[in-house]
Length: 337
Image (cartoon, one colour):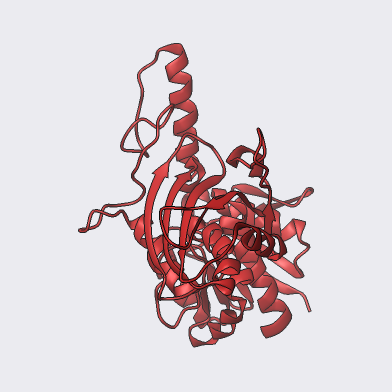
């Protein structure tokens, strides 16, 4: 059976990556529809190497006959259109933050908690986690299965593509401006991003954390274990694609570096590149365009009784968004629809 799939937000960074990923993985779709805002209607987007789709307006679209919706608009747009799509019989896999913490909406990373997909029937919605959460829980779950995790302290180094195409343009334009001595113009970011790092992603909350940091805390608890405590500092860095994370993990019992390294090597979707030598680790630039989550710098953390530290990188547009959503769709198509 071939499926009818709609991509909401098809002109954005993640939407375009969803289209590319569907084509690359030969998802069994008889029809793929590209949807976006009224101002984007009529534009063309690529689907695979040789197909072009004309973008249709989301507001006017009839979801009747659509099996799966891969959604990557803003949270407000997702909240508005998703009920209309599910009422028409579609299953919405949403990449926005709007549904993630709803009790009756599964929050899924297939390699970590793929069994949760079965809960989609409550509302016909499945939530894609935050990009920084996805790559971290991918690395945490194999370790948690060996020795329960008590606490995680993570500092992220997040690329500008996570903030959209305008953010990527801003980094490019500011970098150029520095070299030609033009004025630095800020729009997407609160401070200059070129040749700088900004410890501020999303809005500030009353406790001093940002919403991005809060997402990593609550999403990790929902996906893996509510008993895990998480402290996050999320930082935007002048990189176009690829997020890095310095992750410090405290366990309830001892876990050796060797056992951790072996468990990570055997886990699906992970690759361990961990050599204590020059170039013996993976950087965000090297993981751009890759589907795997890479783990490097695995070592003992002597500041706690049972601790390990590691460096985790992934393409935030691929596994951090589009690929994760397509993997969910593949399981839906194979086992549930």
